Amino acid sequence: MESIVLIGMPGAGKSTIGVHIADRLNLKFVDTDKLLENEIGDSIQSFLDSHGYIELRKLEERIILRERLENRVIATGGSAVYSKNSMKYLKSQAKVIFLNVSEKELEKRINNFSSRGIARKPGQSFSSLFRERQKLYLKSCDYEINTDDISIQATLGMVEKIARS
Image 1 (tube, one colour):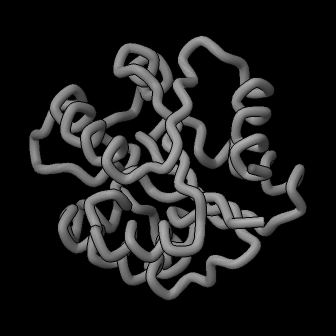
Image 2 (image 1 turned 90 degrees about the vertical axis):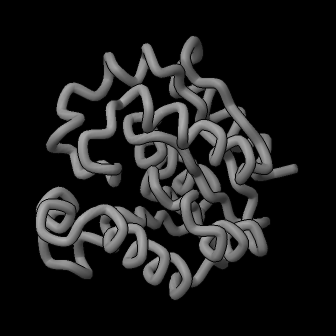
């Protein structure tokens, strides 16, 4: 079975779905945001505050490129799609699934946009970031699942079906 990579905006459910699907498929779960925090020894927001979003994206790319991909479910950070190298590497050995959530739904889920550790240009609005990334997610994915109006169980079922195909 090919590994699974989950991409999408912060709040899309990549980690939640990833943990459950890894358990269902008996694969190892990897959260690249957790790897990043372990690497820096601090929160992503703290790193962003002191080093900026470009440095965070560079570090995220290095972490992804050194990660083993076999027998994994990988939940990427929301900004992983900015790295062509990362996406090429992930797509080479895994099925990339975009958990697509509408801007309106994400705004309900994310109430800490300015302090959540989201890599973005200084002063960039959530709406602007959403539109910018949406294009990258659609370009980078092998599969897209719109999760606005479906349950976690339904999403898991769709991801499992993709994984087993």
